[in-house]
Length: 354
Image (cartoon, rainbow, N blue to C red; front, side, top):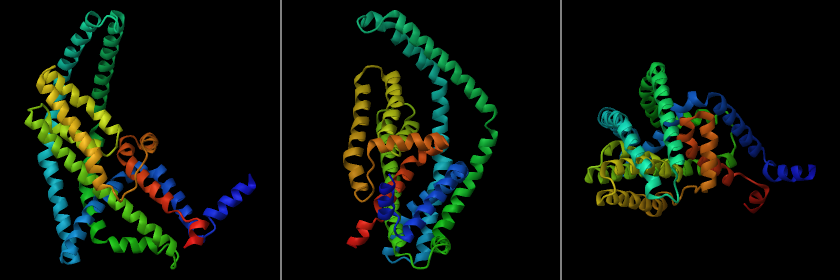
């Protein structure tokens, strides 16, 4: 066992910079474990800054001065931010309230469908099974209602925190864009002056994470807008709300698509029933998902780290268990970052070859 550990150490930690990198990762992990929820808005600002830095880079490549390109990208971000805040958010909120009000009627309609199952499919369903299922659903809905009432009374601090985040995040994005070089230089001042290995790893990580953040932002926008347009064409209720859910579902591959399919199917079924309109909506939704997975994702993420589905599930469970909803939201970016670090980690073999 000692020989195995010695060979592993000589292979992966024989260089001083590799040891420094390991210490940085340990410190970063400790900070995230202790202050993860507090630093979540900072992570949001970093991801948004990566998105807008891509816009600034495009403007610079077209001859726009650096400071002007940062200012224009910041104005573009603020314009989109206020459009979401004052146009999209109220629309989605109204549709969410309407959906909550209509939920009891949907549940009652679903209960009536369940009651008919033993008569139509006696081989697969019994009356006792249906009674147990409906009782469980009613009990669950009652508990959810109680939770909503309790959360509603205690949500004022959370609302105040959300208002503070809405002010702080745009400010942090602006300063991350404006003072990016100064911030990177300040952090680099704590590292050795000669650090070619760390510089190479940082360059690879920066490229991988930038490709992921910008590609995922474009994917969310395209899938969200396409889903909304499809739902609106078929006059599906809550089109904006469902389009927003479908758009953000791509942040968590596989899992997000499976979860968001449930409300889309339920709303379509209770609105149209088993009619051609229902099949048209479902078919169009499936086409969007197929095009996303087979055309859009390979096109946007050809240079980014590809994660195995098992790694995605583990990342969602791990970070979601640590930070709840924030952890689910950041699970894939953080897993991508970890995968990029592992792939770029120096070893004695790679150093010998280089």
